[in-house]
Image (cartoon, rainbow, N blue to C red; front, side):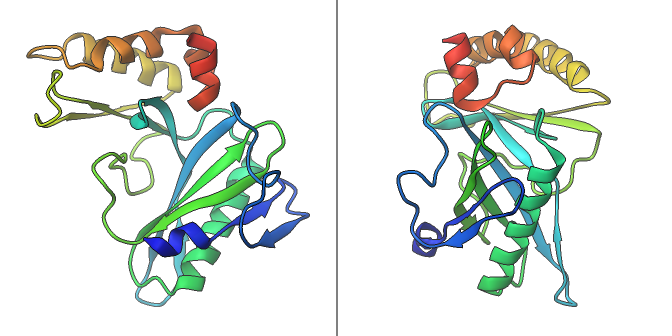
Length: 212
């Protein structure tokens, strides 16, 4: 909602600096190094807030998220812990009575991040669906749009595995064997998943620059 635009929490990974207010030019992640991460927050009847592991929106196309994964590749534990702490404080500040999602933009090199959105209601259809802690050590959620026709329903695939490598292999096979006409995103996704850059853990804008 409109409230989401006004929240900005900027913090270094060490937690040394924390400040609220409108983001400034230098406060946000550097262009080209941005990662997008979601922390799901659930509120218990007792009023206690629980936060889940970070989900990363790791593969994008035309401002649409095609792959979200958990855990986020090579995300420092100290940064994930800071994201979870800030997500809980945002939920507390707003008096959330139900589950919600706090989204962050992170500059991977400096560890600077900021809150870019906070929603309690069901998320839009362009968002990953995963709402809870992962059901396996590694989880990948893929979205494939209907063939060229945006009005056709899109397909969501949830792939689980013991390691990220296993999940990527299973995701590639599942995409290759997807029945029906190939969606507009299938070739794009196959190319991304097979790329060395993505396999080594590059995501978001950093992945786009590496693969082109």
